[in-house]
Length: 207
Image 1 (cartoon, helix red, strand yellow):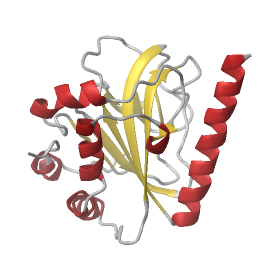
Image 2 (image 1 turned 180 degrees about the vertical axis):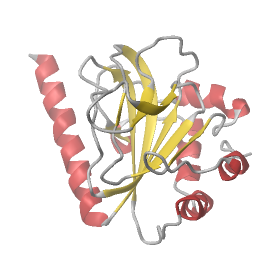
Image 3 (image 1 turned 90 degrees about the horizontal axis):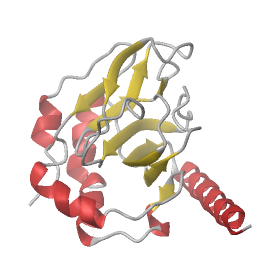
């Protein structure tokens, strides 16, 4: 049984202002959330981690296989009117949010599409809610705000306007990030960067 609801994704209209994005609550089905939550990798420190560096359970790995599958790619190609054939995917996971996270930023030009899938079973905090921003100048000038509830997806096309951020939150905040990137060189570079970052954090924590 599929853990994702592509019909829900396909039925959700793409918003164009201030850039191409859509928000899909219930993208991960309610029946699948418990097992994925149970099998989510244990991440007790800040930062994004490549999945190859994490211990993930079977339900989580099954979700990742679906996210990297041809049906998912085809749905995104149609939604964003973009040819993603031969574009590599990169997936990372987060488990812990730090005070420095969430500042207004834009993703690198090497990324074509950014997909965030939240896996927090409860979210009542005001911080940590991603905002789709009209500009890089203010976190309060936003078009949409997304509580990181379990199963919710936000996806957007990276361009010169795609600024986003969230108010400060410190604590557990689970999010899977999928990117389609321009080429394999980007994928190699990003993996090397994440590996170095993880090594440096481990070194500093041991001091």
